[in-house]
Image (tube, rainbow over all chains, first blue to last red; front, side, top):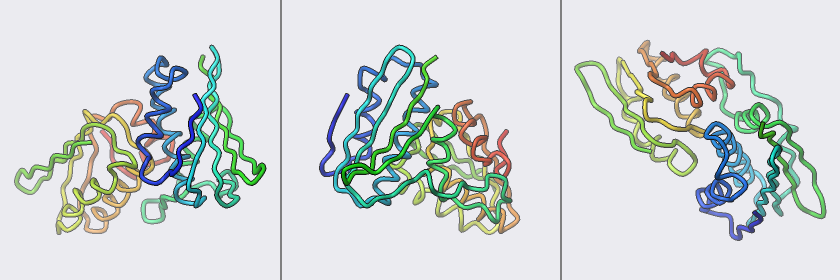
Length: 130
Length: 100
């Protein structure tokens, strides 16, 4: 699956469902789909909040044992993996919400990669399927 | 995402169903805002039919818990599905919100 969303504004649900309903994803286990949905939402939300891009390209490549999802956008250069990790042991009064989305992706995917290439942010998630 | 709020004496039962995500987090915030105005909150969030939450939902559960704790009230989340519980466990939210 490869799809361009331009403009990106207001299309959160459409972007998520495009991934969830693509042939590479729709037949996976409920547990895997839960994790994929969560990570797609978190990355997309990150792009909307920080990159300022008006568009995003989303591609999904699957084989029998690995799923790869790549997001590309034309916004400002921003590496979400460089953000400090949230302190998940902080007491209630000191807990902050920032950074939880990408932190969840780090825990739920098998690998994440970010690079800036030809004026585009390229964010890749890989999940092993077995 | 459906949110149903009922009062039983001093206790408030919030029944959640469906997916809590970026498309409905603002509405959920509106729904729970009155609960943050209770002077002595005693809240149960029944998660039997809550299928999913992203960090957008976590943000609001944290906000509600902070409000409840600041007033010396109590809040508990019940019957959480294992996949949803995993999100709370991974982020350490299980340590700051009571889940039974």
